[in-house]
Amino acid sequence: MHSELEDRSMSLEMLVFLEKSRIPDRGRFQNAVESLGVPLQLNSALNLVSDRGYSPSSIKGVSSGFEIDSQSSQETLEYYPALKKVIGARDWTMVFRWGSSMSEGACVLGASAALVKLCDAIAYYPPDSITYDLKNLLDELQACLKEI
Image 1 (cartoon, rainbow, N blue to C red):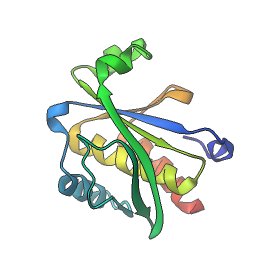
Image 2 (cartoon, helix red, strand yellow):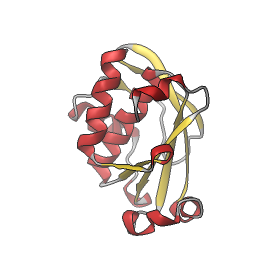
Image 3 (cartoon, rainbow, N blue to C red):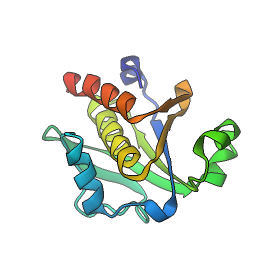
Image 4 (cartoon, one colour):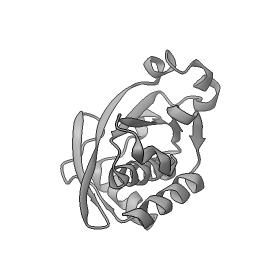
């Protein structure tokens, strides 16, 4: 994710590939966010297994959020077949969408980083064909936080 993205009016998305059996409950997910020092407060009713649509949250005390969806990685690979070798046995895809807001982008980066740390997930940003590791996600997040 690059700062020029804030100028786009379309929604953006981050794909996070993980094993479905490792999807954390909200408490473990929030703890992972906090362990990274990310100032993100997830929706108190968040359920990564069943939630769809907008999930309110806050970043640095600012109300924000992101859209959430999920599907089997097999469905996702129909659109991104080159990722098959990269994702390995990760059979589930969390899809985080946001608009042009830097705070929304920061929420997605924080949530993605927590899943990468907690679940050995892989984050992929389709517009730029970038696969992120934890360090890259946190670096991008810090850049976003400076602008909020």
